[in-house]
Each structure stands twice: as structure tokens, then as C-alpha cells.
Image (cartoon, rainbow, N blue to C red; front, side):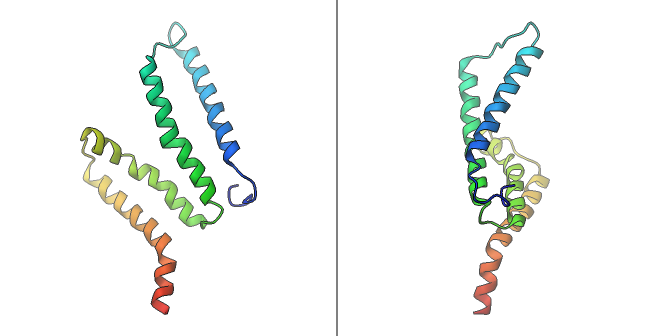
Length: 128
């Protein structure tokens, strides 16, 4: 949809989707919490809101903006970077060391993304 409707700005739909997901998750949390209601300190709600902005909203908007000019294969590889980089944050912040296989798999996907992005430029340079 992002590539087919390049002329349409998808940012409002991403924001609407996030708001509906927030409302739906809040409603489900309220219903399925034993006794109803929430018992979450404001500090944790604020941290969750910041994480939602930094880890979900901003990257999704950038992804939608970039989808207009990036090939579909590269978009798919870039989407995989989310799963690859997820073990990086606990490692950097709380010193939780991922398994060696996470580094190997992550390295393969990062190399594929770099090759997909830089490959055409390197190919043109080698022909010149």
C-alpha cells in the first residue's frame, strides 16, 4: 500500500492506527485486569509513552516516507532490522549479553541491508 499509493501521505493513517491500538489495548487491559481498572504508576505510563514515540511512531513515519523511493526488497530488509536491533538495546542499557547466534544472524541481516542499499552504487562505480 505504501508503494502503490506513493502520492498519499500515510502519516495520518499511522497516527490513527496508533491511537486506535492504544484505545483497544487500554480497553482490553481494563476489562481483563482482575477487579477492573489499572494499577500502574504514572512514571511507568510516561516511560511507555516515550518508548512508543521513539520505538514505534517515529520509525514508522520515516518508514512510510522512505517507502516512496526505496525498492521493496530493501524495505523488507530494513523492516527486519527492528528484530535484529532489539537485543542491542538491553545489551547497551542493562548489560544483558545476547547469545552468539543473535550476533551472527544480526550480522547477516545488516550485511544484506547494506549490500542492498549500497550495491547499486558500488556496481556503478566499478563499471566507470
